[in-house]
Image 1 (cartoon, rainbow, N blue to C red):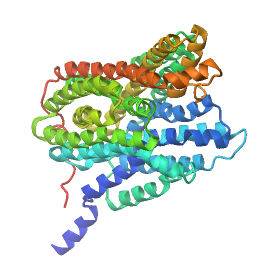
Image 2: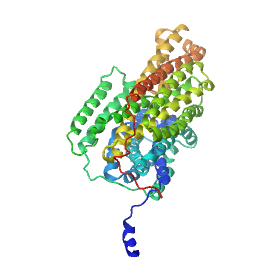
Image 3: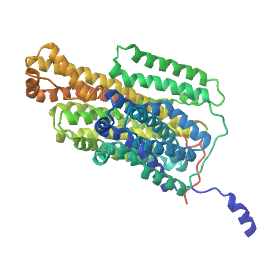
Image 4: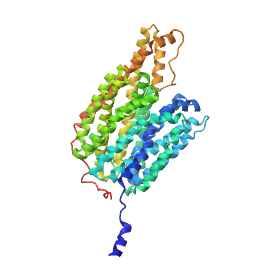
Length: 531
């Protein structure tokens, strides 16, 4: 009997340490979320020290998001083929090495190219890392506990986005290069915890669809590029629509190509599940508001409320207070009742919260707005974990990485669309209102349009970020009307936030179509229970 036990023991599967595994994945994705917002705070110092152009700095920011959009699906598929733990380690190493190289950028003519290239490789590392990390959490936790685990995962990782501006302001006071170097200790902790957690690696013996990976990268990259550059190139530009339309054509080709593949990059049959399709639509409309709100709320606080960057970051913490609480509540609802109730409550709360928040923007009082800011955050918090978890639970053949890649691609694409569309609404509305204000104070139409363009460019970051300038009558008038301009900007933001409320309302209509029930309770293999 003793001999038999010795023979069996070496082949017994390692039991994953669930808490350590969740902590490891949170540390790993922390870098990717913080980096989405931290660079914008350090942008003025980077431009000043390296002598970058404003368009060059915009590319430094966009390169990261563009790479994310292009490679998310590939990251999810690689997690299935190679094992999620391996891909987490590779993605972490790619991300942290790229971060170090971004912080070591040399001064001179090559600086701009250097930063853009390694910001893009940072995005590649994040695209590999995030789907694999989510797949690890899904694989380690049984279905009965998965809702609360993923609620914690999404709640904490989402809240890290708000830390970016605060951390960026503190680190930049030392050196802007530290915003990249800070990822090194976080990555070390993530890698050590990953080893200690004894995470199992399940691989699929299938081939990688290289042509499909190329098609979706080109399609997503082109269309997202068109949305990103719409504010700079203009919506009337052939380049804008060429990128958007060209990207969509390539994505259609990708869809037609994937249907006939034995081992496709993305198993499109998953969209035959009505619940998965509804989950994806709800995530799309939620993300139209979730990522753009960081930018628009922060700029509104600094322009209309005259807040410092640190105060603007604190303003966003109201949003994450509601978000964090609702994420945990939504996770419990998912475990007990399935995703539909949480998604309906979240989209309804979000629509009401963003509408009431928009209505209060012209009061120019941060104190009066916080209940509605928190309500909007709670709405998003109820949505993200249940919709994402239900989508993953409905994956085909336990292909967690692949389906995670799909949902994250949908989310990132929606964020790009939201930033482009709402940014255009803000710029045009702001310009019209400021021109009207300046003309009522005696400026000519030409002078008013010139100053309005300067203001719009400064607050949206689409050109050289300069303050509106002028001499004589123009300068004098600007000093007199700045209070009115702050109100004009608040009114322009109202349209943006009303648009976010509409997006959540459409999401509510989609949530009503969810068939209910929970996916993954019978079809998928459970991981071994924790010791």
